[in-house]
Length: 317
Image (tube, rainbow, N blue to C red; front, side, top):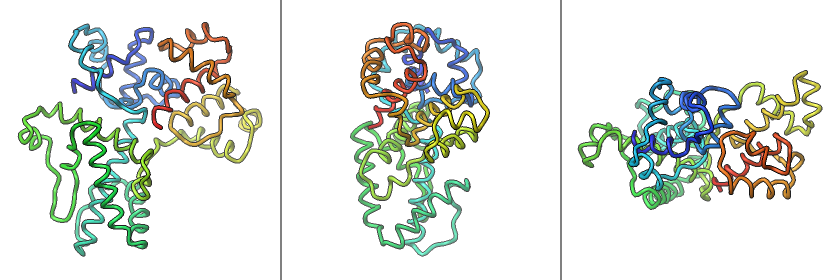
């Protein structure tokens, strides 16, 4: 996927190691890798290539072709995990299939997704739509979503992958022939459309489709910390109760913020501190936190991390 690879190459920061980028692309489950992705605006491609070799990633970053560098500037991806955009899109497809089959009084069909999480998620929303007779509202929101994506990307390939009553999705090969485009180009554009769709589910005022906004699951220990924070426990209290280092709890908080779970950070970073750090971030682009730390008047790695994540995630608004 050439356009996506150009995006990766243009956002990869040379002061980061190739190994860190490789771990990002294969989806290493570490808080450091999550943070590396945020620092470089690479969350949308985290775990995009789970089977890519280290050698292939090395070739990608060392390819100095001017074409690779110059043709990526128009690609806009929002800071959401690739995995989350896939889950949301699968939920969207299953919802429309469920509604379509219901309206045709059909119950004998193969669901587009067999993942239990997606099926349960869609079932809850479908029950709400049916109970409140919100089918027209749903149709209006789907129409708005399609127009929004087309206006933003110039394409709406996702509609060719929808399921419905006696309607089957097209294959990439069929779309390639229909639009006279390579399969590579269509796959790249689908990544962009799914990323934008997730953004729409979060930011546009959809009464129904907003329920399809999906967050990447937290690690088990992070989830436990999150529940304690929501219940009002302080970092020090959680650290003592769990018998771990305070930096571990701080890493949990960074993961919570990166994965976009709501959390009040005012006790950890003041607005003035954020403004100060934000100015540094806007005027400097580094991959290593230590470099920003050295030029920051606020000598606190935790505050720096929070500010960086907050700044990057503000693109989602």
